[in-house]
Image 1 (tube, rainbow, N blue to C red):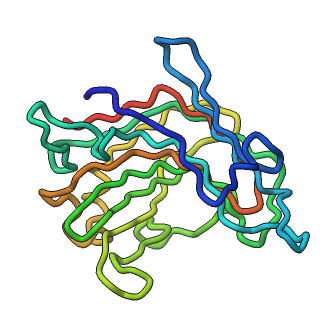
Image 2: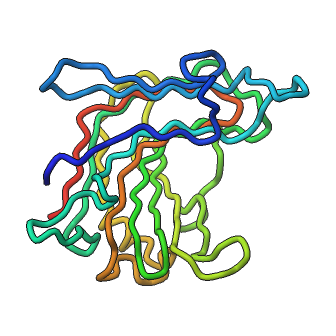
Length: 229
């Protein structure tokens, strides 16, 4: 595939907290032409709200691997890549380090790989958990940590979203992550509307997401590869 664009995305952080503590940061390291190391720093363990109490809001710092115009890339005829075009695999090197423990009742310090694609129902997502010392959630009998049951909070039909356990990371140990999203979609088909890979399934992005609530978590990501074939 052509090399797509990428960007950093944050959720629930004010820009005034960039490169501050508590706060967030995203950095790029490495000489031109070599694999880049991307650093995602997400520190909310000692973050206070306006009343002076521990802030337990969800905070995210994300590396988003995408292509200008949303689709991960386009075919020579300018048509969009679909999840249904072939087997979709992702791999990258990752390292995580949590500093200290948790300051909130919900013990969330997670690193996930999120594959996002657009279907006739709406935006669908397969989220794979690699680090979750809390743990944030316990898996059901199928290995599913969370699902939206293809419904909005109001009960209307929407894209299907599912979170599952994946290859685990040990703190401080650099590991190559390998994910076959096509295999996962088929395995968890009933959580993806029993039509996990529809013909119209435009690939939107691959994201590596650092998520915390009252915790400090650093993630390093490098040599990201996404293939459709």
